[in-house]
Image 1 (cartoon, rainbow, N blue to C red):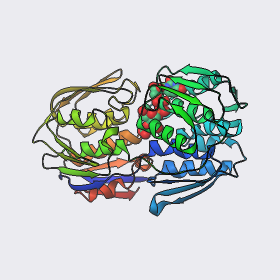
Image 2 (cartoon, rainbow, N blue to C red):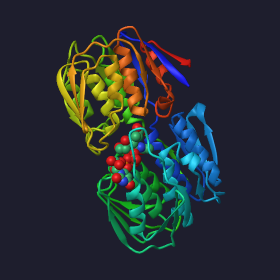
Image 3 (cartoon, helix red, strand yellow):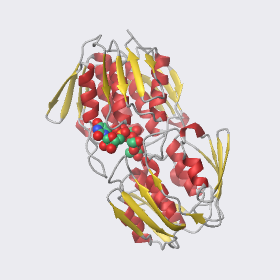
Image 4 (tube, rainbow, N blue to C red):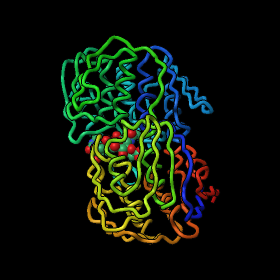
Length: 421
Ligand code: EPZ
């Protein structure tokens, strides 16, 4: 297993090009199975989760060609015949559960393993299943697998997501576009990843209204065709590097290839810490303040502050003057990074789904353990401001969601060495 050895204390200066978004790519890769012809997607990041999902599509019979030097994925769904997604692949990557909506949506039958949990606890899929039943799809559970069956022209119906769920919205869209007379999703997720999926499905020939709102209505169509699309840039990578660019007082970073419309209130919140944030089209410039001010945040569904950014924000607050709190209202127990930051010298108090941070604390390098994707990147951020050397273990978590992370950061002044431990 690889680890990072990071020499802290150097400012970051220069330009980073943002990669394509993993979380935006996965739903449209699944959607390609709904088409009657080949789909080509550009700006696909070279990440473990993408490779894993490509293998899931190959298991069901799709022809998948990932021209990874060009970050381009070509999927030919015309020979899909094995309508099952096995446990050993689904457990590796939760979003494989999107195969349920794609296969039952296209073929009227799917047998997909229930996803496993993840580092920070159970992540249910009850809304996915209840929503499909509301749509008129038969759902059975059999030895850890979901078996879904559906006729065409399912009667007009609707379903309200409580709480709102990205994954459930994605799965219900995939299941409905070819199956339902009319299906309305109430309290639908409004994340850019969902908007991109809707726009791609419409380009394929689907009939969807309410795109970008919390009430999406699908009217079924006879067939969908393959398309050529460019995947969105990764909004969480943008947020992560914006924070990386304000941790050392002499840092100044330029981020190219961003979609600022996907960042919600993040630029404005970051400015409240004293950082300078300049937006010019798809370029964002951040300049660190001499001293960071403490700013509290609470995560919300989009367009609120994203839960995928709370670990990174908490890490930044350890370097700010004053007391701040970070509350996660989406995942109540997504705080496995707190004890690891404490090992570096952070002064943090965790109570239920709120961590209180007493800044500013100086970090001393130590060995720390990655536990999940976003917690791991917050340890890398912390290590870059710690005195001396920090060892970040199990960086395979990072390889799931950040393309060429150490190369991008080293190119702007970080000192990160990847070692096979
Ligand atoms: C997506 O996960 C993202 N993953 C997550 O990013 C992200 O943290 C999350 O959305 C929230 O924004 C992908 O896009 C692949 P949810 P998802 O369903 O769809 C509850 C990362 O780091 N819920 O929106 O699984 C759930 O427990 C990953 O890239 C139910 O109760 O998240 C949570 O509290 C981590 N029942 C809330 O909804 C359900 O059936 C939001 O979860 C489904 C969800």
